[in-house]
Image 1 (cartoon, helix red, strand yellow):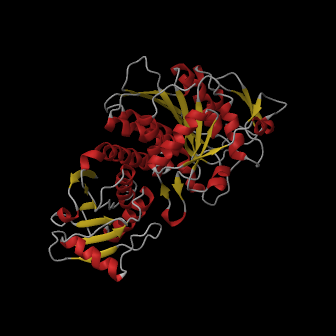
Image 2 (cartoon, helix red, strand yellow):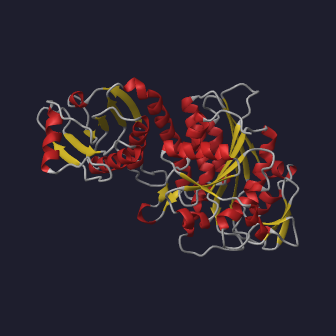
Image 3 (tube, helix red, strand yellow):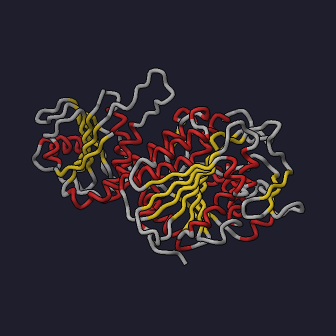
Amino acid sequence: MNFELKTFDISGAANEKCDALIVLLSQSFKPGKDVLSILAAHALKAGDLETKPGKPGRPLVLYRSEGVACSRVVLAGVGDGSAKEVRQAVAAAVAAVKGSSVKKLTVCFADLPREDAVRAAVMAVAEASYVFTTTKSKPEGRAIQRVVVGLPNSPKVKPAFDRAVAAVTGIEYAKEWANRPANHATPTLLAGAARSLAKLPNIKCQVLGPKEVAKLAMGSFLAVAQGSDEPLRFIVLRYDGAAKSEAPTVLVGKGITFDSGGISIKPAPEMDEMKFDMSGAASVLGVFRALAELKPAINVVGLIPSCENLLSGRAVKPGDVVTSMSGQTIEILNTDAEGRLVLCDALTYAERFKPRAVVDIATLTGACMIALGGVRSGLFCANDELARDLLAAGESSSDLGWRMPLDDDYAEGLKTNFADVANVAGRAGGAITAAKFLQRFTDKFPWAHLDIAGTAWKSGTAKGATGRPVALLLEYLLTSANPYK
């Protein structure tokens, strides 16, 4: 999908030659004497169109209106023009026309929008028109191929537009890999996707196999992988856009390409959704894809420990004790708490980069999904400045997070007589105790953990990857450059 930013107002939109035209009208819209303004004024007066904040109405579809070059016109109210209202309006408007063989779409803001509203419009068009086709024998991809965003004085919001287009590119790359079934997204194939990114500007990739990981003494990661015939892969991505002396931000993505639970096997219903357990890894891949588009002057490292968590005669057992790369021993009480076992070794590996900050991203706990649902990702961070930056990035990108506690008392349940730490601490506060486990491996750098178990995918009839939190991470990387104390 190609996006283009153009400068024109609502009167100029009438001359746009396209398959469908979406006109976004805020509560401050003042009709002029042009044809689209007159149509909108009549619709508002008749009550067929609503522009009041918080009252998103159905988009009004018009066909072959006199004086308008486009055959299909959709009028949609965006209330106060906030990113949320724009996103909802654009999603509804695209849904109203995407079944009509629309290849070229124009989205026009009748009033000068805020920067976050422009980003919301771009991302809403992409989200509403996205189609996964990789494993279909007769794929019918998205019809919309070109999108023009028109607004008054467009140069003022050009940076926001460019960032949104890059985010869409990254989000759809993340969706592609997260949506693939596990036999089409093995650790080896995931490593291939990372290697393909190294063909893009400023990106390098290194892939380590079982022998290299064993030499690094990543006993915790190896333990999870040993039950599967698929060999593990440890993926190291680097984006070098700044001087070598500038400390990188490290992103660590959980890459469990399928999670059966191991010996602590999951129940059968919805186990197919465990192909999404590498959504953290997909998010890291998506961020690097977006960085290649924007080419910012920053340094970023991506670490992806990837394997399957299966049960076999070789699988790790409840009660086994393993030694992590850090030297800490871990009693594995539940083999379905495997994400933290692969992440802890990757976090220790991150020390060698002397990072300004490390953020891990993982579909880690069902407990976080119970706590926050699919609206906000759980943010765990002991560094207030880093937490503020991540939360602010989530707000501006409409990819929301919510800060969760990290009190030391929550770590009491991780104590065991047989190792330095246990990998689980019971059901109560499960998302927090999982974060407390990870925190043990992060004393050398500022660290944050994003639990995306509730936000990485949608269940039910609309099942599929969301591509979160690519937008949040990209916004964070581009807006926070200072070292953390």
